[in-house]
Image: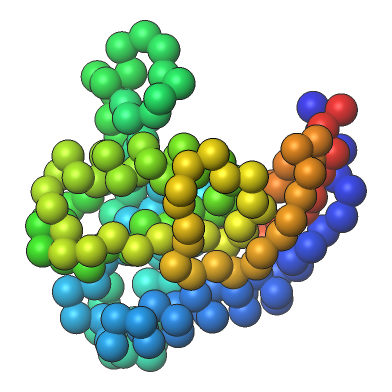
Length: 178
């Protein structure tokens, strides 16, 4: 259980962070050609869709978005999780510039699993990482290419991202573990 301490991004600030990530992706990739966004389930998918929409508005083209289920690739999985992969990637990743999108970057283990899951589907030209929030405390040498908000936290805190698509409203909060 956790108790909300502080809301660090409201709806408007979250929207600005998503827009900024979209613009930075365009700049780094010199446009949107061969670009695909793949969101890590669950909130990363909604963020990827929002970023793709922003990129589409600027570039005048639709950027494909996929859903990645990392469950079968997690290093802490139990049982036969490999049988349950609910990813929805309806386009080839081979040769594409892939931007993995997640809500919170913490230890890096989710990203490691996401890279493994992605590489099992083909070899992209490159993989970039976008995170709405980077809270630190890395256990693996993983660094995001695009960050909406750097948010240093203690190990006794968590970061909760709420999105209207699954939570009814948009905000990011720091919570204290009880």
